[in-house]
Length: 319
Image (cartoon, rainbow, N blue to C red; front, side, top):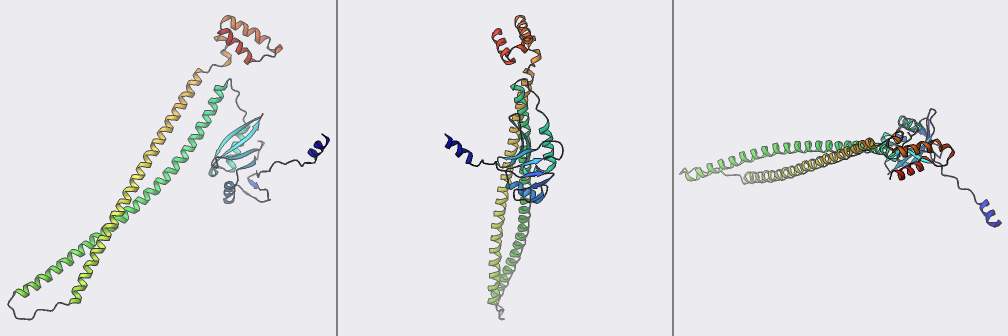
């Protein structure tokens, strides 16, 4: 037995792992580096850690700032054995002014609740506020994506417009070239049908071949432009349909969240209406039960029975 005690004494005590501290807006890391939180270096530092200790500038007590779900920050402090949490937001919302505000909120003592229903009401209200803030962030991201897609669509429309103008010009050139070739062919046929013995002008084969090549190139370019136009049109239609679908999904999501919020507010309102304070408890009791309650309250200082036990006894008497 003595050996076991001696071994236990010899074993070194494990010290808790220290976390970085933020004092008067300055970050102090374990390796001795010091820099401001409200700076690009401070923003990069927030992405690399999961918790730190914040010491307010006033009389408020320090507390721990933790990251949950890898995204959202909370201010935490243990009070009378229970951890109180206050929502801060994403890293982009975390700054010295926000941390001072959370420190002030953590100093406010929780309002004593008459029963668990009222406590749950407060928790649900805070959860609704948190969900609403996250919903606003998601809507902002969707709006940014929608703006980018609209700009892309406008650029595609401009490219299509330029391609159409170029295609029209090429078609006009092809038409003029075809008319010139037809006029030349008619002139040659007229010369052959006449009885004039004059020599017909010789047609330059190279010129004719060059004209044929130019005509073939123009036709190929025309076909390529038509194919490019069809591809751009199809891409633009696909982007537009996708954008409309995402906007519809976003509207549906917002409607669902609005309906859920209204349902929660209705439930909270109903619970508030059904909630009866402890001061009116004696009014709802029968005369005998009210008399017993008065006697028990008069003797409460001499008895070890608490109010919960008394209410349980009264419920038994009422039944």
